[in-house]
Length: 122
Image 1 (cartoon, rainbow, N blue to C red):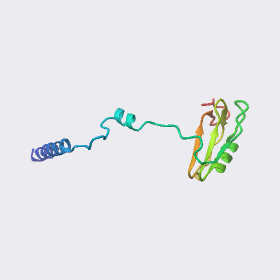
Image 2 (cartoon, rainbow, N blue to C red; image 1 turned 120 degrees about the horizontal axis):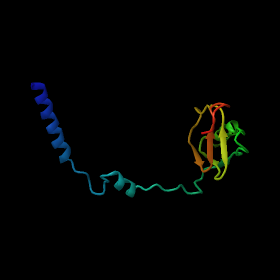
Image 3 (cartoon, helix red, strand yellow; image 1 turned 180 degrees about the vertical axis):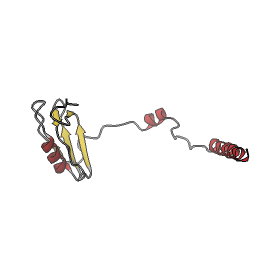
Image 4 (cartoon, rainbow, N blue to C red; image 1 turned 180 degrees about the horizontal axis):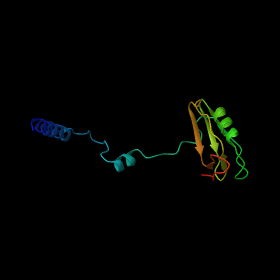
């Protein structure tokens, strides 16, 4: 019984201490207040980063995995890989991406992944 009383006492003290802490003015107190204060903004088009494009898949069997990795390698260390809007990119094999460093992917197109030839696209 003494241990449970100790836990109750510690919990009461911790609750009192937490409610006594006052946040400075202007600090968001809810997720909605945070989102309102720190809204997501689209990055400026001229960000000083080189932009690279790769060819899109011509159909659902046109695997562009190698082109995708090449595009990532070109954009690595401070560039942007643009996957264009309205185009589809089929990734049909595992990708080794441990080399990535400071790269942006502007993902406007559709990427479909196929784990094996007998599996549907996702």
